Length: 333
Ligand SMILES: NC(=O)c1ccc[n+]([C@@H]2O[C@H](COP(=O)([O-])OP(=O)(O)OC[C@H]3O[C@@H](n4cnc5c(N)ncnc54)[C@H](O)[C@@H]3O)[C@@H](O)[C@H]2O)c1
Ligand SMILES: O=P(O)(O)OC[C@H](O)CO
Image 1 (cartoon, rainbow, N blue to C red):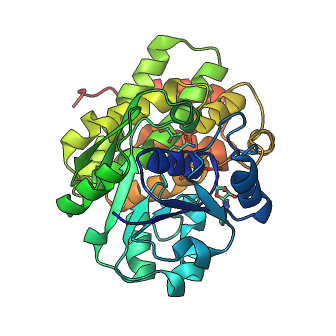
Image 2: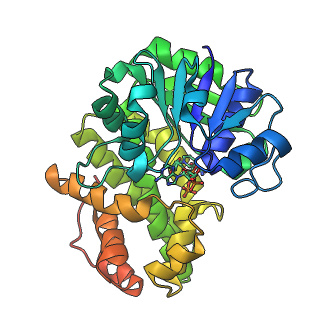
Image 3: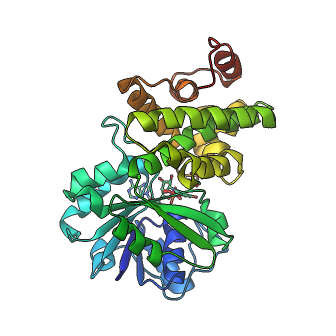
């Protein structure tokens, strides 16, 4: 794979750019703010998002999309889900129609209920086999510290997935390939919502049984939605399903879990948002689009429903347990 442009210099965009550069790829990282690009170029740091992490000397950075895209054979999209369409529309005329598009975002678009790869296909007019998705238990700060982890590269074109895999394999980052893009994207989007519920449970003082119950039943409702949308159920037992769910629901590094914890401790959505300092907790918006997607397909997602009500309808997290536990009893499957 030739030069790679990474769009979005937040926690994950910067970290994934480092992974690609460490794997030997030629990488240019586009930052929205010129000061961030300047800092990466001159001091090899991104103090706003990855304080204390030294970035590779080979990593270039710019705030000019044309410079980032010059000669690029692949474009990595690392902006928040709800702004992807807007950003892509602005960059559309600049992106070579033959490049590989690599989506890092974990969300479902509000209103259209589109997955991120569907937004890419729609806005850029490229075939779906040109879009790859990276997902898995990938907390940016741990990977930036070169702690070992695995991920999946999902693309309906297996050979393209292998090329992306080769471009990002390092001594600390081990990507596997799969062809189930639907499953990879839904696993990544839904686990943010389940992590909010786990955070709320933690904030309310509940322990590990509650955590494990939410993780397991969260996986069940995610898989139910996935199967309804054509995903391979086995994807949810893999890195983009269980792997990401466990990491996000358990880690204090997760923005979604932390956000939920604040709500569980009694903070308002506004207070939790202010405390996030502009860092995106995707589940706060995706809980609504995923709930709508589930309703459209007649799929029951009770945890997602409750998270939506807490985040958007003023429902008190203290009522969450009674609401979920008090539902009509039924078989596990
Ligand atoms: N941080 C992680 O550990 C991690 C891991 C895997 C996947 N992800 C996913 O990657 C995506 C990006 O997450 P992140 O952690 O880098 O987020 P972040 O909040 O750290 O950074 C977001 C980046 O996008 C930019 N941005 C924000 N709004 C924008 C807009 N309207 N237009 C253009 N740029 C905008 C910000 O300036 C910033 O550079 C999310 O979908 C997230 O779920 C994150
Ligand atoms: O910090 P979060 O909650 O956005 O989660 C980060 C990653 O998606 C974990 O894989």
